Length: 221
Image (cartoon, rainbow, N blue to C red; front, side, top):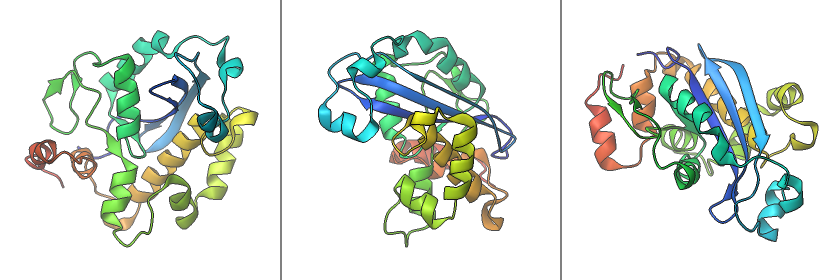
């Protein structure tokens, strides 16, 4: 299964376990191209710490009139049924997602053809992919990788098309999701990775040794 054969949904959340998810951004990659984006602010489920607000720029008054993130289960469950979820260092998004909905509906594994389970993963993780495939990197942070691989101009162009004017910055959910989607595109369009399969990308994205061994049983290229 070539990596572009199903939609990939690149997510980013702003918030914490304490405050809940305050903003989400989702970029849909279809046939390897950015086809759709979605973002919204979400009402806080707890206290927003001042140090967190200083990073993501969101406070209680900013999100007070918004619907809670929990209202969007159908949207996220539908995405998960049709393609894998992706994020940059996905353990953060996975953990936050599970604080609201521990499980989606029964969905394809995508790392193991013919297997279904009720789990938000396996995730495609650009943070782990870049760290593993480019071991000489000093850091695999989102902003540093965008700079190193000359993606900043393209990111800002896309932000003007898709992001709210006040959220065209790092640590804004859709901006960061666009950055991650560009990193994925940049990786899999390189000559040495052009034939990458989805199971191979998911296996390389997986830190858990048991789950990685399960994915290794699949034909990767």
